[in-house]
Length: 438
Image 1 (cartoon, rainbow, N blue to C red):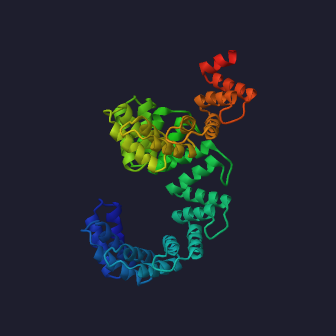
Image 2 (cartoon, helix red, strand yellow; image 1 turned 30 degrees about the horizontal axis):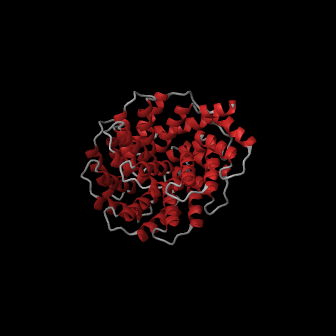
Image 3 (cartoon, rainbow, N blue to C red; image 1 turned 90 degrees about the vertical axis):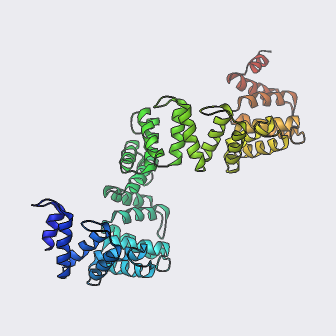
């Protein structure tokens, strides 16, 4: 009877017919065929050949599990874990995962490890979690192989070992785990546990992306954009940014917007750029918040709106974006979308400068030199001109040269003045060129 059901299910020697498959599974199950009982439970769980009925699925999983079938034990545990066909009961889920694992079911071994890792239905025990991941991995469970690689990578209940992490990621990837494919690609890209290999990194990013992993899609797009491990191809970069963005991956949304801004891999379209910046900003991605504010400030892809520009600069700045901090300071300094407030301008220039924004370093130096929003302090002005100049700010190079020439905040030093005028001149500052000529 069970064999007849299998023939109807797979269309072997007869036309595929799930209803007839269900009928014969039921007949065989009623005659105590364990394999048929499990198949009947699956039919009820997935609504194949009959109406979906989770209570009946649970009944048959329980019946066959109690007869010692380890596959059904694992399925029964899943029912208890997720409250499918019965009340949620994590202790019973743990019990049946343990029974199935002890009977050699590798999927249950992995699930049991997860219970120990997360303290579900039992006390948290990372050592036991590692033990069961190891057992499941050796029994070729791809998810356990991935988790074991993760344990070795980060030293969870075992000494950190990048070579072993790479080994298990490779095994899991070969068995079709897409997150392992991604991690394996990262190992190849960064030379973690293996030699650096951009081509292999690209290969596994592509494999993971084709298996619907959105992080891999983003990384694959970056490979195409920068020609890493493959030929540079901006159209393909755009394609994968778009794929990842449509899966609500915020970094990809931002990258896609940048493609539309610059016309890279697609036609320039400021309205679409604005749309994707907005999508990413609404998901709290600070880079996109800052870019969205720029769109509102300059009227790019939308109407100019200084109040909205200020709103998004402020939101991004308060969430730690250094560029937005600098732009917010400018809003306060110039009265863009908000009342002019030099004290607040100084505050945000200082925050941005301390977070490494070189334009803010220069503006902070100006505040100290001219006493804008703070008491005048030539020593601090010099300090921030120096910081900005060392970080490549051209205007700061010129002002720093002036400080050395005139002894502003520092002792006069003609040699250093000459050096910084030269640096400013090399970066296109015409006044510095003139000063050098004199």
